[in-house]
Image 1 (cartoon, one colour):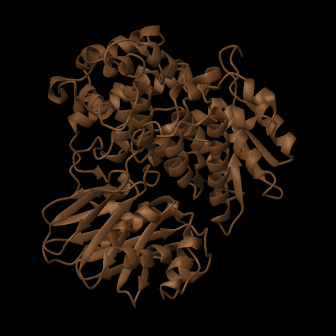
Image 2 (image 1 turned 135 degrees about the vertical axis):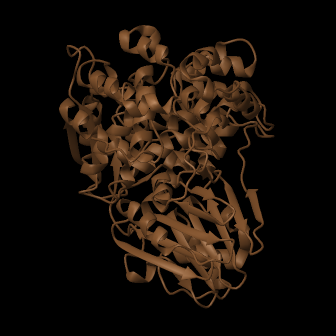
Image 3 (image 1 turned 120 degrees about the horizontal axis):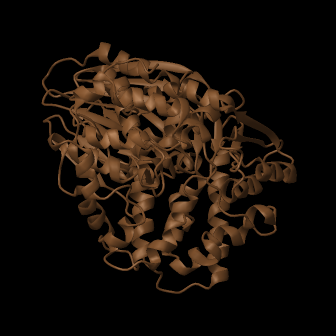
Length: 598
């Protein structure tokens, strides 16, 4: 797990090594264990290493294979690297290191660009072919590892974070009006390849890009998710047995691909508790970690799930650590989290992950997390509502998911940045893609392959990696997701959702954890739009920078500020509309304008 960056020149000039250094410095927190820079003709790489597999200097990067004339920078983990290494050795390849990075180099030489189809893992990498003068970029199937790009007629640059590209300089920071519409409609999700800045794009998940010496660019999607029923129907028992087998294998892969201890982020919910149950007999003295927050609002709503995480930790005798965060620390540390956001992310979980990762990183370098289970196995409350709704697929989806309709968007955004209802067009197009049997199959495929990438998945890479903590997500193993995508929707929605996971948990984890309502415990300091939080947002939205940027119609801002806790000023899923506006403006001030987050 690391931070990568690079530059390829198209104009015959040498790459800007000073820019590579600035980008690398911006990525330093992702990889505190080693830094390296490489240059060959028009190409330069930078790398920051977090040592997890093969802790020796032999696995440092940029990794140069002199015999094959290939050079690699890589962020992520290839969980099946040992099997691939054995296969490559039978082909005659000899290895100088023990990790997964060199396996990527040999795999590329042996199987070409299709090597990515053999990888089971999370990855973003770049390979430079010294002989052909070709650059090859690749990203994993679910975009778990980020890869940002900026390009003009003279050069292409890439990096593991958007702020790193900005540190390199020369980026068009004009607001992308289409991305802005996505951002404010889809809970701050801006699906790849766009970002809110015109000059920065993201390599699509499950895709590769090849850049040739003549400047031509070739892109390929190497994997899609088939959401149709199998030719031979399976019984419920067969579905459950297959789920248990695939998940257990996914967990085992993510455990064994590490030369350092692996812990679990234990929320107290079903998903992370199930991971602990599957790991408990494989890991002696398993480390688990939970976070909660100080209650607010008269204590009517609990801001932690310690009641349940404690049960799981005690049941499996884990080495458990529990962190309770006071509200004053949330407000005090919020500027730090915004400064570390690779893109603006409005979910309250972002600050929770930031503060939890800081503490966990003092104990371990790798943890597993339950992210993805709700999207893959139908756990969210809006899925049954969508299923029961009538109308077109877009209508059924949007009325239970969109943060605001297009008419309200036009009231919010100034005419300069207004566009048509581009988000509805995008979602309708994605839902209509072939290889999905039912409407819910379409929704879950969209969630797993598009929406999850730029919300919860991005969050669990971005915030923990700011502390050099790698998070692994067993529920996003592509073989497990493929299995779930073939399941009948009624099996997933049975007993309130996520039935396959509940069923395989029986007898493994406490029933009280399985049968409890799904938790959405808040970060109270950010849930209630009052006090210091409200005054902070007021200061941002009334600042000269915000007014001068001219994104928001002032009448809309004034209406929110006049009655910030009015029910109509909250979205269905992600909280205060005022926070949505303030967060984007704050992010732009920090990362584009260079204004101190404090």
